[in-house]
Image (cartoon, rainbow, N blue to C red; front, side, top):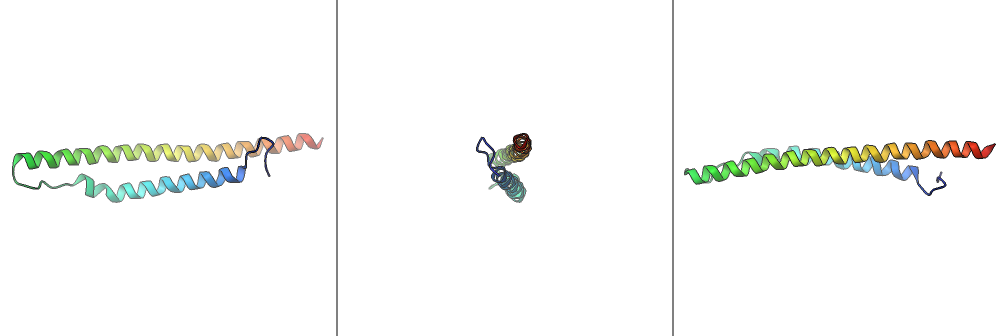
Length: 101
């Protein structure tokens, strides 16, 4: 049923499910990439190579932390869309009931 303000609650539910699936994909991809971006070995035996590898590993750890934050935000966005859809459906049901009187 379409609400009077033009919101498709089924579409909001689908969007919420797609965003939640996207957050799950991001989690899996980030976890799969973690070993490769945080375990860089020095290309040589000198101090500069060790420092370069340490810098790359630190950057990889920062990237993982950022991706964890982005994944959390996407999951929260999915939850917000889902709750909004339920709210619109509830209000639409109340409005339809009121119009029946």
